Image: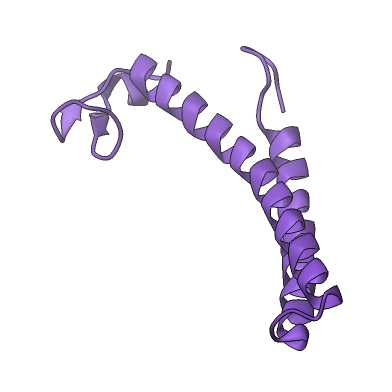
Length: 105
């Protein structure tokens, strides 16, 4: 740990159940960081699946002629584009997020 981090006043302003602005240890910061990165990584993968499912269902609605077919087709294209973007973010998160303690991205 660097001298700067030893003297820095780390405060928990948004995470945890403790009082606001209470000093946090570097261990607490590290755990919060690990959990946050894991949730963000998982979120990108979950969003890929959600967008692909939404696109598939809009396509099914359009194919069945239910409701505004053009709107369903437009939303299916949009969700597929979102899935592509989220998939790129998920791939990058996989590369950048350490999978085990001490590993390097």
